[in-house]
Image (cartoon, each protein chain N blue to C red):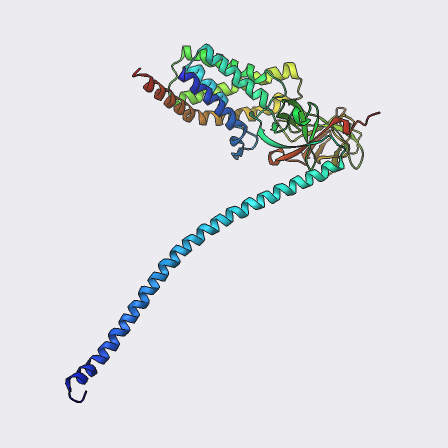
Length: 245
Length: 167
């Protein structure tokens, strides 16, 4: 090195430049690396987002399965409380008309569902089977004006028939003027119609009106079951309520 | 033949829609009556024996899926078809607005038929008192849907006619 005075000079001169250049290169490398990482992260992020969506869908599906199994478990519990002969069924279709309130079940005569059977849910009475094919059944809901369920007021034991109505809430028909009926009273099935088991909740009285004339009072009922939200039901055999002699 | 198949398919589709998906609409107890719209379309544009049978069967399908009494809607839909057919002989109705008006009136005819039969034969207490609101709303919704349904059916029909032309 002593024989070459230019070399050290160049080295000395270049050193700061090299350091600066190297720093820039390092910076660029870092940026490049970061960009690469960022790109990787972006794709990773995208992949993870996809995974989250998948898991979210899976979670929703599992929640739905859980909710369904809970409902079915509760139905089975209810079924176990009733004598044998009842059938669990799912709702597969609704009414095609505004005028009639009904739905179609996925079980029919092949599964033991017969015309005239009562249809109940966990909450209470739903309706009655009015037509059956081998693999499906039509249920007339309690909200239909053609339906009727014999009920008693849980508190005062007053009797009447709950029927649907197109112009108002379901009404309690044939409730005598002298009967003690108040708003908030709960209505349960009497079991006397030979269709519905005794003691099932039908609804709550929301309005009582006594006119100055007439034999009966006007009573409106809020049904316990909202038919539009039902997915599974229990079809109850008439033998359940009419024990064999 | 193809046209009959198209209408058969349309019939199946409207019944399916009316018993399932249309219940998802936030219209309360009102179910849009596409079946009525289809019957009116047939009455206006295809007054054939097949269409008469089709209207009857569509009404019958409503009975099968909904009504506790068979034949009630079958009668009502046949009556609607007849009324629309007779009116189409007197008035030229090919304007969307007019067709919507016809559907609106047809819905009232159906409602009147159901009330009449219900009152005479089914003895349902107070059936006719509260239904006016329902008839009006149902008629209004059906009338609103009618131009779109008519347009779809006309497109399907003209497509089939175009396909048939080269033959």
